[in-house]
Length: 107
Image 1: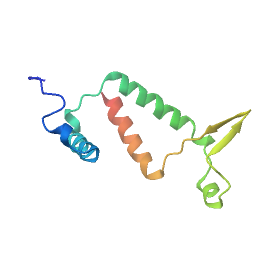
Image 2: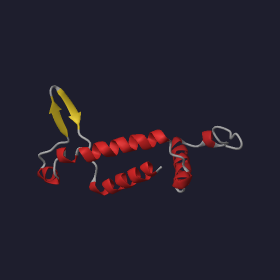
Image 3: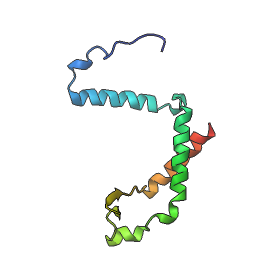
């Protein structure tokens, strides 16, 4: 950054919490509108590649959609005495995950 900016910016503290959140969200939206300008550290790419590989490797272990429709699956499984939450990715998000992984590993 070429110059130090006051933290928080003038007038920020006089905003309500909802307005502060909206302000920060608008800043993030402004930054996210130019993803090509946002640097991605190599360790982010590595984590993304590892998670994608784990996701792809677990395809055979995931229940089918029919189990959800029948209501027989509640999103948890019992392993010994510990209940573990399963993580499911909505079908419409899977393409986004693959695209993010391709982008991250293209480095």
